[in-house]
Length: 435
Ligand SMILES: *Cc1c(COP(=O)(O)O)cnc(C)c1O
Image (cartoon, rainbow, N blue to C red; front, side, top):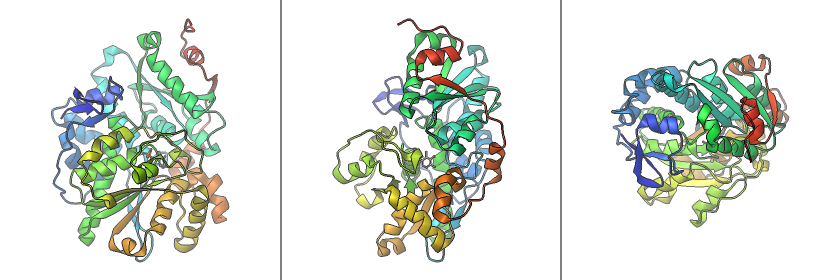
């Protein structure tokens, strides 16, 4: 299969090339030239579902012979469907990986792909992966690449602007993972990463790559848990599953759309956004108006200009004009707080602030629509990652999963830098750039 840029159907790459490059040379995002039609098959494990669902993407690629091994290595933790309560929705728990958020699926899969690709490119020099993060991405990527032979990772986060527990998860690495606390905002971190990519002298001595959510190697594995969950619902009930997806950059939502377009038994897809309402406004008005992000309790979704929108706009003309099949809502911080407290009382479930947006959208559905479908709420992170918000609302401590507890025990290692390219160059032992 070939992958084309969203900006030019003629600009194509193999899967391996698209994964290594991240972004297409014209600044577009890579999308499959055509989404394959996959017969649904039967429900099974994540690696087995991946083998079936993703085979067409790997066909003819240099990674083809590794496809099974990559899935077994990366998708080695469960994504269980758990009932919420009698007669209510189910919850797809995506937080059982090493850093307790769904980004572990994509980060681990990308790392497993790059490891195999780098084995054949050793003479080209080591790869350095730069990641700007506002929280969950950086820790998932750090965990996925830690002590891997094929790449070094540099994580940049805005100093003082992540929660204490997120900071611990960003700074608890050693060996090939280094963390920079940037004296600036998340936008400064992103700007620095972009500047590094465009700096010719830096590129001459370092092979740089990125691991953000536009990389196709992070999107593909996310289609797998939607396929597996929808097939389980289909076999049990004979009905298609409808998913409510907490959304920011739209990577997770796009994976759900791709799974449906490939033929998985999925009915509605509902996007739950926080107060950053660019996408809900677009669905209501048809006007695409990206804007600056606003800070909310569901901080991993604080995105005013979602990077995957370009892929969504590319796909939309292919989706039959049945409005109910894709919709989007915006949920305020007050509603997130109230929903966390309410569902703990009603169901004994503790949501993270992101998952709470999906729970709130579910609660607001008209009763008839709620009853007529098999609803699945997508739980994107474990609430223990956001204990400072959640514990005050439910009046008790959130139990910490073992995987997270292990990270909390590790010593911290972090370097502070100014938000300038010269500071980053200095960290990399390169001379200052001439101005
Ligand atoms: C990243 C993230 C999201 C948003 O996912 P997108 O793919 O960017 O839409 C939602 N919840 C959590 C916990 C996240 O870390």
